[in-house]
Length: 90
Image (cartoon, rainbow, N blue to C red; front, side, top):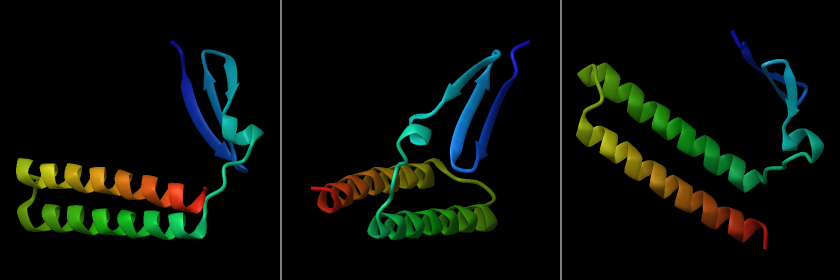
């Protein structure tokens, strides 16, 4: 049996799989995030968490219509993040 483990320690992502050691690219060259991107990500995260929590508390499930709405929100999030990244890093 091959055991998979994902560790995140001191900013170093290490994946151990089948006895081989793989180190992610982020441990070689750190990936930075701009303040505007961080605020955008946190706002989107909190909005999605609030919507999903409300859907589950009120209806007890997420309907197909609500799921479609969440997918549309995700597409808008990705488009917004792409535009923000392009504006921040010329």
